[in-house]
Length: 159
Image (cartoon, rainbow, N blue to C red; front, side, top):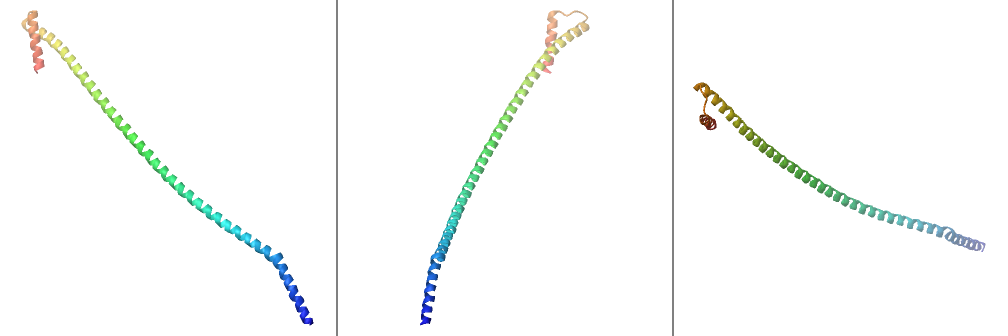
């Protein structure tokens, strides 16, 4: 019976030890592992949430970048159109200025030609009278003078 009592004491000691191990060591260790597992799951969920948020922000950033590129392209196109318009306006104004200058030059030339003809007519008339007086050796009357001047002018004008 000794063997039975020792066996019973050993089994009872084993059961008490098992109970104590479960109570003192296994449950806290199991709770610790469960808490750690929850933390890992939470970290994974947080990482996935942050990853999804980062992807959403990346897509939004790409959209904003694309929008900014389109706006820059629009601004560039408008600036090019404004520059072209300004260039065309400057060319038009320059052509108008050149046309006006040419017109003014033509008027000035015409005026100088008119004055030159008048001066030439005066000189021709004077020379005609001087030549006629020398050829005729007498003074020319006013009517003869006018006739000579008229003929000289007609000769100049008709070529």
